[in-house]
Amino acid sequence: MNIFRSCSLPYLLVLGRRNMMEKGEIIKRIEELSAKTKKRRFKQSAEISINFKDLNMESAENKLNLNILLPRGRNKEVNIGIFADGDMNVRAKKLSKFVLNRKELEEYSKKRRKMRKFADLCYWFIAQPELMPTIGRTWGIILGPRGKMPQPVPATADLDAIVERLKNTVRIRSKKNPTVNVPVGTEDMKPEDLAENILAVMNGIERQIPPDKIRSVYFKTTMSHAIRLDR
Image (tube, rainbow, N blue to C red; front, top):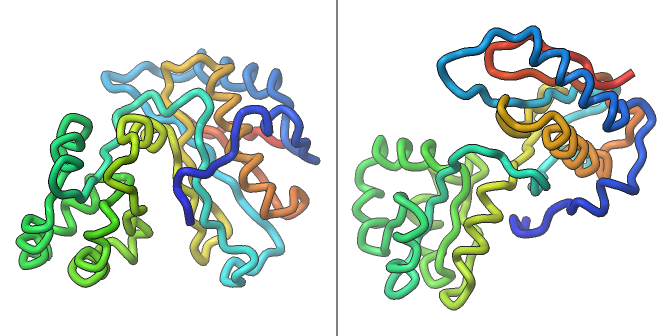
């Protein structure tokens, strides 16, 4: 799947749904939750949980493998792993702390625990096309099961734009359970911005899953209780 293709904001404005609250209602619910939630010493993440019904999640047609660009961003730092040589490696190091060249890829492959830690620290991976065979041979066993195999990016690509887009893109991968949890921002974002991100996620999901197969949608921050966003 191309991680640079995702649902855009204009699409958010035209796609309807059967049971989801309208944007204004979602904003009100988020404001009510915020007023009741105790402030913490850290910035809490915000997420939605989508629960499905009457779906065989092991069926290929129902498996979700989506990348959704949040129109109002994630409002938090997201680590991007970049595998590149030469000039692309130099440019990549200005954008990410997680950059490896061909030699380093090979060295990491001899230390499985170190590879796993690196893989878990990064949300996205991109790579110079010439390195993909090496990555598949040495890192595939670690990145593959995590759904994090790198997207090939030409050495001449605009890395700044690609990295910025990825930092605001969320990954949705369904498993056997009929539930997916998706980050939509942080507690200190404006309720209207969170609402737009939520609707963008739902738009993306409903392009594949019919609205009547969605049992419920809940929103919460890290330490808050959950509120329902569907009728």
